[in-house]
Image 1 (cartoon, helix red, strand yellow):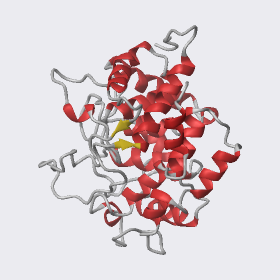
Image 2: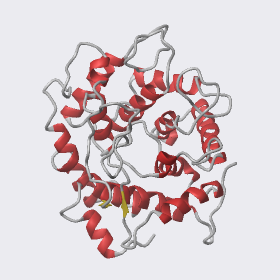
Image 3: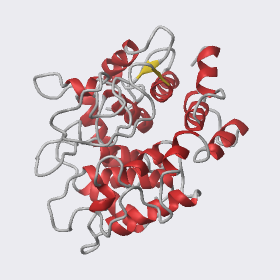
Image 4: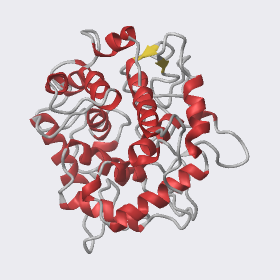
Length: 339
C-alpha cells in the first residue's frame, strides 16, 4: 500500500505520538518488530505522548483517581477511574514491562477476579448476578494486550466468553437471546489471542462471531440506521463504530471478505482530500459540537485529540485496515477466503 511521503512524515515524524509511530510501521508498512524504528517507538510509549500523560496521573499503587476497596471504585466514575485509562493505555501499546502498567493490571486482576466453581469471568459486579459481556470482554482484551494472556483469570474469562456466545454467533449484554453489533467486545478479546494459542473452541467462536458481523455488513441491524455507529470516535471504551468492526475483522483474517465492502466504502468516503481521517467525536458521549448524549448522564471524558480536525489515531487505524485489505487481494480482486 502506497502512503504519500507527506502523510508518512505526519504520522511518524517528531510531532507524532510514539503509539501512532509504532502502529504505522508495523500495521501499515509491515515492518518487523525488530526494526529499529519500531523498537524506538515502543520504548517511548509511556515516556512521551498520550500514554505518558495518562500514566503521569496514576497513583503509586496503580490506581487512577479513586483508590477504593472493591471493584466498583476501579470502574466509576466513568471514564477516569482506573479501568478506563488502563483500557486506553493498552490500546496505545503499553505492556506489563512498564511497572506502572503492571501495577494497574494486577490491581484490576485482584479486584475483578471473582471465582465461583472456577467459572466466573473478570468483572467488577458481585458474583452471582446476571453477567454482561461488556466488562469481561474489555478486561480480557486489555489484559491480553499488555501481556497477561497466561493468567488463569484471563484464560477463565476467555473460556466464559466462548461459553456464553449466543446461538446466532453474536454476543449481547444481559438476558438478550440474540447478538448485537454492540456486543463486539468479546470478539475483539478473542482477536488478541495469538493464532498459535487458539484452541478449537476459540477458533470456532471466532468463525461464528465473524460470520455474525459479516452477515450484517458491520453496520446493518434492525430496520433503521443507527447513527452513532457511523461516526469515528476515540477512546472507544465499549462503544461500537464501523471502524471498530473493520479493525477487528481485518485482524482476524477477513480483510478480503466481500462482505466487508460496504463498510470499506464508508471508510473511504470518510477520508479527507489530504488523505487523513478525523474523529467525529473525541469521546463516545460527546459529539463534535461538544453536545452530550442526554441518556448517558454526566461523565468525565478522556480526550487525546479534538474532534473535527485531522486525527493521527483515526488515520493510522484506517490505514492499517486498508493495508490489510490490500495485502488480502489476489490479482487486485478482493477475495472471500471464508464463509
